[in-house]
Figure 1 (cartoon, rainbow, N blue to C red):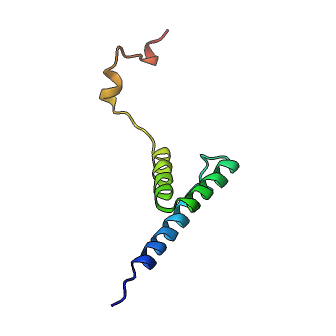
Figure 2: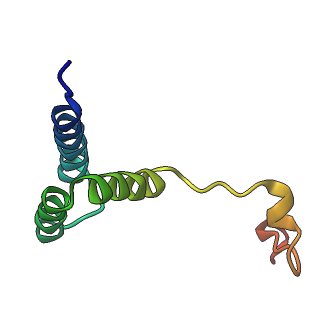
Figure 3: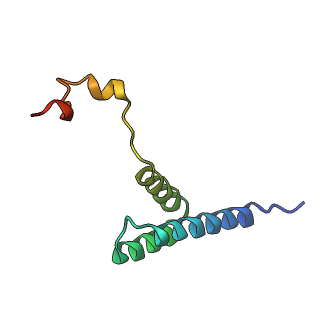
Length: 84
């Protein structure tokens, strides 16, 4: 019985590299020079870099929404409509 672990690992690394590379190239977050460096890093460090960059882009793309209770529970509420 042949072990295909190496082939599966290489395929998974290539798949992650392609997905992360496409996400970096299509992202508006990085400048052109940063995109080139990110793609090079993805190719040099396959699993760690591709997963890390995809998680970073995912966190940047998702909006941060504070709940209304947390926003009003600070030192004081600044209601813009009450300003004269």
